Structures are given as structure tokens and as C-alpha cells.
Amino acid sequence: MEEPIINITSISKRYQLGTRASYDTLRDRMASTATRLFRSSPKEHEEEFWALKEITASIKPGERVGIIGRNGAGKSTLLKILSKITYPTSGSITLRGRVASLLEVGTGFHPELTGRENVFLNGAILGMSQREIRSKFDEIIDFSGIAKFVDTPVKRYSSGMYTRLAFAVAAFLESEILIVDEVLAVGDMEFQKKCLQQMRTAASQGRTVLFVSHNMGAISQLCERTLLLQNGALIADGKTADVISTYFQTSHRTVVNVDLTDNSLRQNSLENSFVKWQRIRMSNDANQETDQFGLGETIQFLATFHAVQDVEGVSLGMAVNTMTGLTVCSSTQLESGKSQNFKTGSHAVRFCIQPNLLAPGTYLLDISANGRGITDWIPSALQFTITAASTRNGKTWPTNKYGFADLPISWDLDPKL
Image 1 (cartoon, one colour):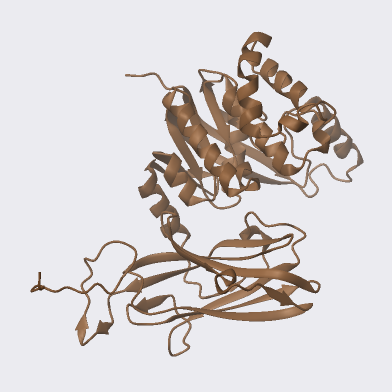
Image 2 (cartoon, one colour; image 1 turned 135 degrees about the horizontal axis):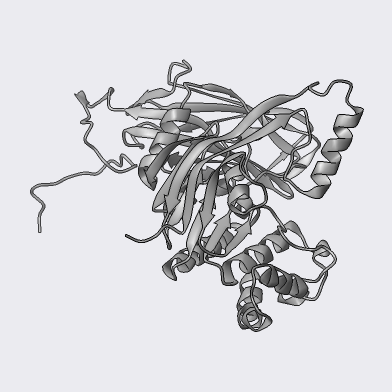
């Protein structure tokens, strides 16, 4: 039997709320000591929080493993422990190989050093010789697309440039284990595709890839196995499609009218976006709020949003995805050849999915607002189910249909040849 490259044995991680987070560095310990000296009561405002609880798993060389879960599930804490940024409160981890981690933009970069110097610095941290780093240098720079800026201090890089170079360094320098957090959300769509392909290539060369993402489509494309964390506990470990299905089942809420002002719902959104979604509701033909629709029913969505100032060139968009993250369809206002101008204040938009288009199944709705310096994207804003309970032409449709679309296909058994 092949020996695991990563062994995780009953690890737990405890934090003290009301105190500074500790990553076991000298600076953190000094700060913690100072905090205790000036606190009126040693236990004042302290509360235990277990970010991870008794996690056990083993990963073989060359596996591509996804790690999913809602915000606060413990995903990033697990990756920090695997990257030795912090240590578990209890339990143990055995790593049989060098680890390259990309946990946040610019991880391991020194802002005063140039891109070139940071490549060599990161390679040295991984234990590589200068000869080894030079052999990969051209590939790293070519992949990152920052050749013109390679001798510029990285403190002058945009977040996108940071991300491209950081990923290229982690992906191309020789390490047996590659750990990638949601940081890829910063990049554009073309760059994300390049990253996913590079991670597949890395795994085909025998490297182990751990990938955290809220993008179920990316997880489905890359990972054959996935771990699901919930409230710090590992609740599922298996084939990616099965675990993603479990994720949506365990997180499903019958919610048909959602407050979108909670920033934890947002992914890939700009903090200074001029347009912010406020609320969305869905209803059937009779204007009744529900998340269950027959094949023959129209699904209506009414969404409100707020423009923080007068803004031009905004395109509102939506996408319908399967429970495994595959996009069934999408639509934006640009399809009509127009974008919208909005005055400061609140606005509303209604859009509908016409009847007899989606096959029976459960779907997720994403909404977005895109434009000049505007991005407000809320994935999985609503979840709804199409059933075969309604009739068409006096007959109830069978439930054994498969696929995503319910297209009106005609059949002629006696064609004239």
C-alpha cells in the first residue's frame, strides 16, 4: 500500500476569543503578555473557540483534494496548520515532502524586493538551490505575465499581479505538496483556467494538490476527492460529486426572501463597488413565495440594490447552476446591447425563468452587478427545485428525465425521406 504523503491525526485548534490570535511567534507572545498586564481581570472577555475539532484524514501522493465548507468552517485554519504557519492545540500532522502554499495574496513576498528577487527568496525558503530556481525562472515569469515588471518592487504591483506571480512561484518551484486557498478568486477568468490546468499538470507529475474554494465548478473540475468541513468538524470525505451534494443538502435552508446586505455572502466582490445588492425574493405565477416549482411554472425573481452614487455602464447579471457547480445558463443586460445608468439610491429589477425550460432538479441562483470599477457578485443567493408535479398538454411529465434543460424536442416517426 502506498504511504500517505499527508497524515492528519485527530487535530484540533483552539483560540481564545477576546485576546489576540496567536500564531506562536515571538511578536505574538510579547503582545499577548502586554495585553494580560493591562487587563483588569485575567479572564476578562476571554472565551474559547474551537476552529477545528478532531480532524483525521490521510492523503496519497498525486491526489487532488478539494476542501469545502461555509465561511468559518475551519478551512483556512487547516491549511495554516498544514503550512506550519500555526500549530494544532492537539493531534499531529505528518508531511512527507516540501510544501508550497498560496494562502493569501503575496504570501511570503517581501514588498521592498523586486519580483525577480522574491522568486529566488521563495525558492530558497523551499530549500532549492539557485541552479534549481534558475531552471524554473523563465516558466514562472512567462506564466505570471509580469515580464515587464519583474525588476519592479512588488509593493507597486496590483493585487492581480501579486496573485499571478505568487501562484506561479508556488506552482512551478519544486515541492511535493501544493496548497492553494481561495486566493484565485482575485484573478480573471482566463487566469483561473490557467491555474486549474497547471494544478492538474502538477498532480499528473506526482505532486499532491490541496485546493480550497467556494467555487463548486472549479472544485468539480480539479478534484476527484473532497473534504467537507462544518463548524470545525470533518463531516464528509469522498468522491467530489457526492461531497458537494452533501454540502448543499446540509446547508440547505428553505429561504425564499434573502437579505443580501451580509458581506459574508459575497465572493469576488469589490469593497468599493458603487452598486450593492440588498435583497432578493422568488415567487411563482401566483406571486406566492416558494422554492418549489412545477415544470410548467414561471419562476419570478425580484431583487433590490443600492447605488451609492450616480453610476453609468452597469450590467446586471444572473446564472443558474447545478448543485455540483456546473452552470446551466446565464444572462446579463448586455445581451440587449445596453448597459444601465443608475441615480444614487435604491432600485429594483425583476427577471423570470420561463416555464418548461429547466429539467427536474435542484438549482442555485447567482446574481451580479458588473461595470466600470463595479463588481458585486453573490453566488448561491437562492436555491430552488423544479419538480415534475405539474402537467403539460394534460399529462404529467415523468421524473426519470435527465440532463439540465427541458427543451421542446419534436419527434416524427414517419418522416418523408
